[in-house]
Image (tube, rainbow, N blue to C red; front, side, top):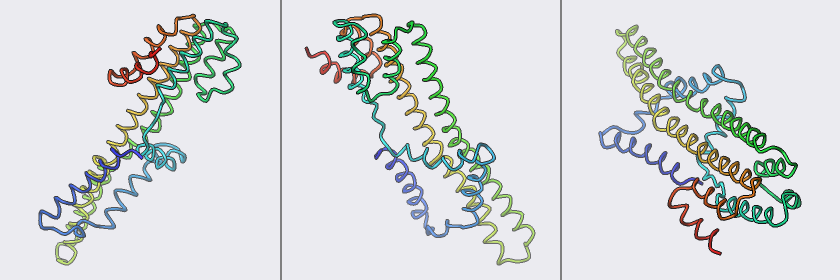
Length: 260
């Protein structure tokens, strides 16, 4: 579980609730079913117009990713690449073939398979970068759906405001209808802002961060695979790979992988 996402969502909602209570208004005053239907469900179904059926149904799985802490195992990748670099220098590139079947990282395995098969370095880079770009494109598509929900929600909130105001103006003589219509008019705007600014925009931002992290790891793997093919010394390889890490992570990993 990603604690920061849970704290962020819970904290935002708690602060809004605290503001409502401290203002002397009960929470139930801000619960309005028509507003929920207009903003939440209305904007959700708008996603089906924006994208495909799979996009609309799959958005909850995409959002669920933000509640998980990704682990790209940079230390394990660097250690493995250094080990294979050392073996390739001592026994030749063909000696790596026996280790490929036990390699869990499919992306690295495909790159090393190309190297073992004698593929030209430029072709290896092109193929690996193409796969990376396709991954980024898939991620961007999913993130765009989350962004679209954040875009649609305030618009549906304004639509609900117009609906409430029209109902209020058409029934000015009916004083009992003024309150409910005004509630729809104002609460839908509140709901739209909350869905966009407390949920969808932060979630899409976190997904972009995850995409950038995974992309950097794959770029590191491309560099490692090509370095092995070029016959670089393992310590030189380690220096190249460590440059992809933050200074804090670099010190921790460097102490482990370069301890000999």
